[in-house]
Every structure is written in C-alpha cells, then in structure tokens.
Amino acid sequence: MGWSLKLGTIAGTEIRIHMTFVLLLVWIWFTHYQIGGAPAAWEGVAFILSVFACVVLHEFGHIAAARRFGIKTPDITLLPIGGVARLERNPSKPTEELLIAVAGPLVNIVIAALLLAVIGGVAGLEQFARPQDPQIDFLVRLAGVNIFLVLFNMIPAFPMDGGRVLRAILAWRWSWERATRVAATIGQGAAFVMGVAGLFYSPLLILIAIFVYLAAEAEAQSSELQAISGGVTVGDVMVTEFGVLQSDARLSEAAELLLATSQNEFPVVDGEGQFAGLLTRDGIIGAMKEGGPNALVRAVMRTDVPWVYEETALGDSLRVMQTTGAPAAAVVSRSQHPIGIMNYETIGEMLMLHAAVHDFRFGMLRRSRVGSHG
Image (cartoon, rainbow, N blue to C red; front, side, top):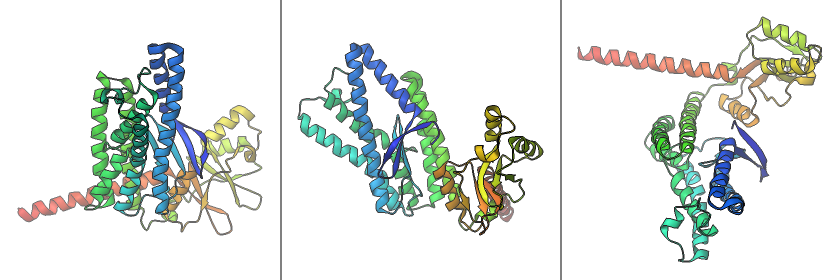
C-alpha cells in the first residue's frame, strides 16, 4: 500500500504503518499534552503503543483465519481506522470471507473481556467512551479502544471488516462482482456521511472518509478485474511491440529510446539476450540526474521485477506484481528472452473495453425490449 513504511516482519507477514496513522499519533500526543503536559503526553505514547499491539493482534486474527483456508497474507498496514491485512487472493467462498472478516473483531472482544475482568466494575460507560482522556485509568481506556475497534470496524464499508461481512452475505445470493459493487457503493455512502460529520467534529474524520471512499472503489475495481480475468492469460493483454536495452548500454541510449517511443518500461537483456531487469521512465530520468548520461543501464535498472510466461493466468500475474510492488512484469519465453510486457496501463485498457462492451450489450438489450413492446 502506498504512503506506508515497513516496521518489520512477523511470521512471514510484513508490518507496515500508513502515514495517516502517524498523524493520529501526533494528534493523540498533542491532545494529551494540552490536558496534562509532558507526563500525560508520554503516557499517551505508551497508550498508543498498547493500541498498536491490539491492532496487530486484530490483524493476526484475520491472518490465522485466512491461513486456515490456505490464503497467505503478504503484509499488514496500520491505519487510523485499524488496519488492513492484504490477502494474496480473495476467499473462494462467502463463508470463508465471513469467517476471516469476523476473526479480527473477535480478537478485540477477547482482549476487551480480559481487560474488563482485570478492571472489575470500577468503570462507567462514559469512561469507556473517552479513551483520549489521560485522567481515566489506563486499562479502562484500552478496553474502551478495543470496544471501539469492534464497533467501528463493523461499519459496512471497505476496507473495514463490516464491508467484507456485507459482501459475504450478499455473495450468498449474488455474484461476487455484484456483491462487491453493492457493498462498495454502501461503503462510499458511509464515507460521505463520515466526511460530513468531519466538517462539524474532527478534520481527521474527513481524511478517513476519503481513504474509505477510495478503498471501496479500489476493491470494486479489483473484484471486477478478477471477474473478467477468468480464462484470460498474460499473452492476451501483453504489449508485444517494445524496445529493449542492453545491460551494458549507457543512459544516453536509454534516453534516446525513451524519446523515440511511447514506452514507460524497458526490458533490459544481458549479452545472451535473456531478461536481466527493467528500466522505467522515472528510473531513466532520476539516474540521469544522479549519474549522468554515461552511467551504465545495468547499474540503475530494477532487478526485482517479476517475469512470467505468456500462458500464465492474468490473475496470478497480477498477484505477483502487487506482492513485489513492480510497475510491470516481463513476459519471457522458455529460454528467458523477453517477448512482451504486461503493465497496469494495458490492464486498465482491458477494463475499459470490457465496460464498453457491457454498456453496448445493455443498450442493445434495452432497445430489443422496447421494440418488443412497440
């Protein structure tokens, strides 16, 4: 996920923190400082670290359920609204999605129950609702946060767990694509309400609303792509006309090729013509600024770019690109010679063509129905 920093890896899953989560930390620190000065501010830091631990446990609840169904989780991204555990693939059945979605909030329920058992009956409901107040007992505030995480994450909006629960329920009756689109639309409506509320209560709500709205749209597009990519291979969407750079070429040659073509990604080959890496437009420009036109291509090319065969399923190739964060994938022959390029631009064009064909068929269907009644 963009705008995030890697903190470490636990059990094969990267832990990342989104920059908006950092803004939340700053806001909590400032709020505590205004109330009780530096001691309260440092207690607030300790409290946020505890909240951080609860959020990580929440996400590992999702991970445990996902792995139960053979689904890997490459990373977790922590956000102001909780966290997002990215799945390597979507669950194949609505029941699986439902169980994975509720596993996270169940962890928070267990944590809250344990904290309440330790606290006893010394706290009132109004104290649980004020986790930002450093004058309230630490454990009471932490229990309140876990209760809040359960309630907030069950809002029916992506990427919250409630959005996935809603999709799972809808998918029992509808197709996965339709269920996702309806759930995404409901989520965007919830984001709009959240944004309006932010105008009156907290600017942070507006930022969260924007993120939720964009996440819902991204989820809908991802589901649509999965729906239309069934039976589609890399060979069906790859670019077959492209320029190639030699690994011992200089950046001046790469710049000439960049100006002479409309390409944004250039496969780099070694002396035997085998794929060795990828050089992007931004990579060429950045390397020219730092190393000058005489720098060698092999010194600045990306070597973490995946390569796939043309018969690879489009969905599998997309997962590889998303996992590595690569802007494109090289399509190679069995002898490792590049024969094509697959990037997000060509996939986007396929989506637009699919939408255009769908609209055309829908229009023809409407006209045929009108004509049958005429």
